Picture 1 (tube, rainbow, N blue to C red):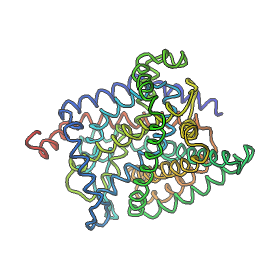
Picture 2: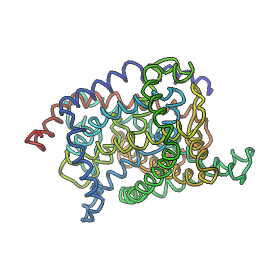
Picture 3: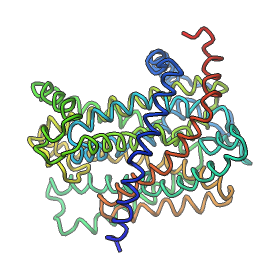
Picture 4: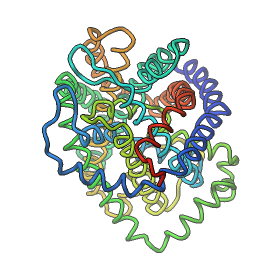
Length: 462
């Protein structure tokens, strides 16, 4: 049964992440970047200072909304997750160091793409029966485009429901379990024969914690994300910078392998990765898995923000992609390439490859801290994607089905704790592609509306 699923998914994955994905991602990204005159560069300083200002903003928030900072943290909770750790490890192992270069390229374009997604989500959002803001790609398609495109909104939401279980839950839980098991094995607390039982127990505990947060509503989700995201990002960055500083002499060689390997991967990987296309696909797909620029999911959290300025909230999207991919994903790649004496290229890998980079520098004791950091990353992503899934379900079948969905979503954690990692990543990657294409079509069709929003907000054109 699993072999059949793997074969079917392989065919779909090769198609969706072939020409269709590359045309949509790169084409729409370049189009929006040119139309906004490289706004991700021109307004980066403004995006950065705006987010700093919101950290200390304690003003009262409207009922049914999050603060702008909570919305940013919830969106970051959805993006800063195992894609930054296990996803980057997989991209480097399968696509070679050059995959990091293509990850950077997709992130540069993705800053503008996400800026557009967030701006449109706030512009075309609605209020539901509970008085909560709801928005995202399905709403800017429904409210921004002609009714003949309504099917596109339903297609996006349907693919979204299927995606949340893999991208937002199962792969995240798998990484939590892997990191905890690695720490316990390193200290001899458990043996290899106990791993399956411990994984099951951890899956049940995670499912209970996820249910507690998600069933508490949008306020609780925002409060958890606001506290968890800054802590986890700072801890991971400090640990990663330590590895880079200790291996500083390797940095020039690592960057050479990244740039050279982007166009000639076989020369860097000893032939294990023989195609530039493989390197490009893995870099772009895992980059999008991490920063979600093009998927549109992050805009669902931003649509909950207590703001009347779509473009101002959109600027935070630029900052998110920068932090997620340019900072954290790059740091992970450097930990892997600096910390490991040799990487087995051409073979699927996950969080264990990143952990081994830390352990080689700090020793086994650091596996405790990496486990804590990985757990925070993954748990925050599960929470963020739980919100996204609830919005998809609400759009498709109504609000009364949201709580049953959240219960089912929570217990998928048990399955994620015990399934094969490679298959989980591949399936999640495929559904990401199916979500992405309707969203990018909508962004292209709404580009005139988006450009007008930008021009109205920045009338001087500077």
